[in-house]
Image (cartoon, rainbow, N blue to C red):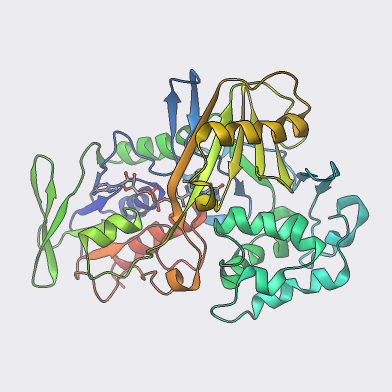
Length: 415
Ligand SMILES: Cc1cc2nc3c(=O)[nH]c(=O)nc-3n(C[C@H](O)[C@H](O)[C@H](O)COP(=O)(O)OP(=O)(O)OC[C@H]3O[C@@H](n4cnc5c(N)ncnc54)[C@H](O)[C@@H]3O)c2cc1C
């Protein structure tokens, strides 16, 4: 098939699919409901703070191979910053103890037991428990498989909560294995943390849109697709805000919206049904970024503090449990933790609380069964699906979203 491809949704999955299709010589139009591309990975100007902020703090690891290739292709690898080495400073809010996890080069993570790069209190048995993830059953959870050790409390639990955005008592051990296999078990070279120097849009989105437009692709923003018209087993038109978009006999579609929209547009498609919130709290204040530009916290409500120029942002994942707390209450409580961790003086500075209620699908066994492959049997013959919620084998992450776009594009190419 060599016709045009209409990509619905210009988040990372849609952009990555569009790039692969353009490289394969296909004409591409992206239809994006929002006023700009980016979806759940975007930056915007916040009036209350008087600052441009990201919708959420995003951390990438050097072992995220598809994300690294994506950044290289759009010429944006240098827009990322970080410590340059595998370095994760931590603090225990309950005891005020501080330590730095610094993965060594080897594939067996003996360094977890090394006092100079250590997780305090970690023992050999804790380290060996990592192997249990590999053989975990299809419904085994992270807490059941790993729980109870100091290594778990001080490293694996915070990593699991942030990578899987799901309480460890519900989160699938197999998805945690995919994270550990692509990072800790590959050694330090795969564990270098990175975040955008300026913002998510500046690193991941704007250069990708420029790359696509320079190669003839078209991005239509504020162009929500509200229905797919299907005849036989093919989509023949998309319903847009200003009329139908006709789909020719050789044309294809990549459906790259979030799961719940894909489920509305194609009710017969299985999609994850449960989601988790991520809370980010942005305080307008300067602070010493330390060696990494972020700190992991255990024993409190905040999980990660990111220190950027003029703003200190915290992340709380798996945060459905906090939805009945008011934003003011959350901001006050977390400010106490931030002040302590960064040794900041004074009253709470101007603040913005951002609650992304459906930040990612919950990484549970039930949802995992509902993640479709790129060409699901239930979908029309000229349509592929993409998104961090499709069957990537990974939790909902930048890496998963980008890989899903590549897989959708590949599924539309001649064998
Ligand atoms: C607060 C937060 C923190 C995160 N932190 C991390 C992190 O640290 N590391 C990490 O790797 N990942 C992180 N993630 C996950 C990462 O952002 C997502 O996995 C990724 O952005 C999902 O991309 P996507 O393209 O699959 O979906 P989306 O970004 O949701 O893109 C879908 C697009 O479809 C558009 N759309 C919806 N309906 C329609 C329609 N009817 N017609 C046309 N367009 C439509 C949407 O507007 C959107 O632009 C985080 C996510 C959040 C929310």
